[in-house]
Image: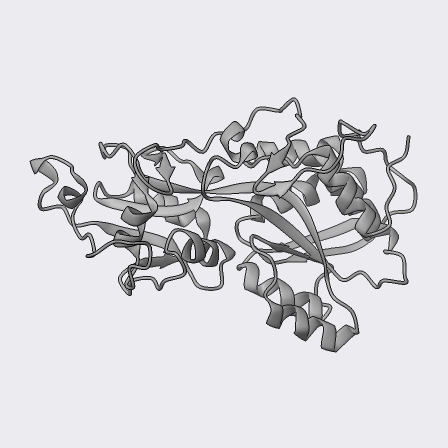
Length: 323
């Protein structure tokens, strides 16, 4: 997933109908414009931390007069930062909640603007020596959940209960996941746990990388995190909503929607409906949706959006692609 891609047009993307094809079927290179400088601040998702940092660092190479700062403590930190105007950009691995939108609207008189910038998938990670072949949502729910809303009749506590051989009979399952300010936490809870509650003994981690590193530290572990956080000592297992027709989190399966834990990643901004963006904000957004910007998405292990989605998002903020 780190290979630079040849972009394709898809007819169905993560359950949303694809837009009609246009003349713009590839990303254009970003071209510098004069006069761009100032402070660029991003506050939000840890999942998007690497991607946002890559964008900011390359943007600063183009514009040495730009001072960039990235804070990545979790998706829930983005809405208040935008509402209180302590950041121009709010990366989030989930859509804003109604309460967050309403708080912003009370402060500003209009809603925040959501921009889809990349596609992510939640990966299920186990130790590299774990022989498990795959899992479905019922099994994931029986491991991570206290409420068992996906159909399991009892919780699973050992690997032997998942069919592994006698060597695993006494190995209890040690779980790792994200903390509650993370959009990844909320997405996994809503989908893999069917909206249920996590067990109290899930070891909550402040960042995606620390989840995967924790899984690598012990043979009996399992964790969920963004698929871009692969490290040595772990393996990602394929998953299924039901049964055992497991699906690998490949780029093709994520784009087609076959992989059942796929999602858009967002950057939220404060865009007044009757005012233009500042030149700095405009150019940073143009950079995100350029050939360079979407290549950095892939470099960080995620999936680039289609050029057609990019055109839709640029239109939201009044940016036209130059011919």
